[in-house]
Amino acid sequence: MSLVRRAAAEDAEEVLRLRQVMIDSMDRPDAADTAWHAESLPALRGRLAEPDGDFAAFVVDHPERPGSLAALVVGTIDYRIGKASNPRGLSGYVFSVATDPDARRRGYARACMEELLAWFRERGAGQVLLTASKEAEPLYAALGFVRKPDPAMGLVL
Image (cartoon, rainbow, N blue to C red):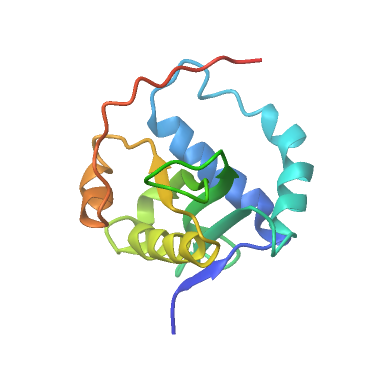
């Protein structure tokens, strides 16, 4: 039996807590600001309650702390017009990969990633994209990801 399960609406607060663990690890100037959690929580609960939607989170329950999560992987599927390498145009995006500091090095993130990748395959995604930290790159490389010279840009609205 797998330790990994699909996150449900009642996991939303723990999902946000682990997302904050990931954000805190990135040494961003705004990392300590958690005021956004209250505004984000209702939408997250709604997304987690949609089993057939384009959003999924896979988690491992913390073995030493009942009611807490040890690991989290979140992803979504997006449609863009197809291309030769992805004719159906469905792409999986991985984000919010986090493991509680006291639960690391147990294979939880890898197990969650494998479940998310299976979920992407079941839904017909032709590619999966993510942004990797240097620390996490070996895990993703072991799963078959390769670094791309992507000229990505962003705009905050």
